Length: 279
Ligand SMILES: C[S@@+](CC[C@H](N)C(=O)[O-])C[C@H]1O[C@@H](n2cnc3c(N)ncnc32)[C@H](O)[C@@H]1O
Image 1: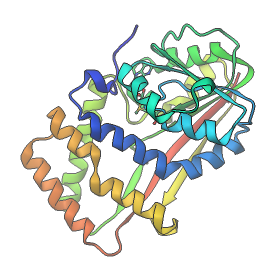
Image 2 (image 1 turned 120 degrees about the vertical axis):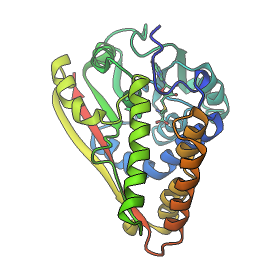
Image 3 (image 1 turned 180 degrees about the vertical axis):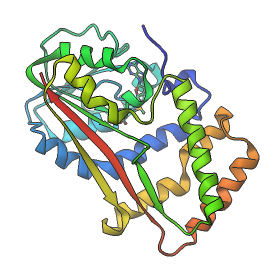
Image 4 (image 1 turned 90 degrees about the vertical axis):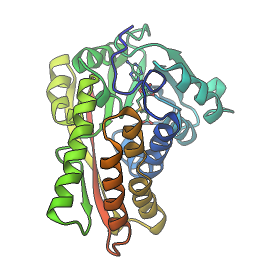
């Protein structure tokens, strides 16, 4: 089983609690838009869905609620996540199955699934093309692959009140996160590379789309989720634990966070990409 991954919580020095909290935040923030996009991309009820790397099952739950006649099969490498799913997906036991294993070699039958939904997974793994070939194998002819992931080059712009020096410091810290992720086998710029990989593997009708959220255009509840996500900032706390940032850098980041927190017009533009193809 290939285990190199920048997101294998049980085996990493990351803080488990904050990592899970981060995932939960992202689902709450993005799901209303993601749901619309998945429908536009033709996801229908009655589908056999494949959801590799489904983590604690937050998205699995949303899918099962939205599509009451659908079934989700997942492959998840981390036993801790599979344990968490038992709680998150209580009541849905006969509508999902999570296999302990790796996406490089799922062991699942070929030509089996109508759609594969791959969310925030590929940014953490090396040899992405091999994984995409495995997704191709398990999809039915005409089956759809939908990948939701980031690209830090265009990913997020804060509306803040920082000085150029503070902004540079913030950027430097985020570059440290990018380097950490790439050393662990991931790539925070993955989305720009996906279209070519899908074409190479044989997918047709390859498309790239995005979900853009601007906090000035969201309702109060969702706007607050985005702002809280960045104020709580589970990833900054995580990287104090991993050693990517030291206490001094952490303290300076907290000062910067406080400055933004007290800025009346604070906000952000947040982008995720959706890359899709058809077998
Ligand atoms: C960032 S989390 C995303 C979880 C979920 N897709 C979501 O959007 O909330 C990535 C997940 O992929 C799992 N993972 C990492 N490497 C994997 C691999 N090689 N095979 C299967 N799952 C893997 C991790 O354990 C984790 O649960």
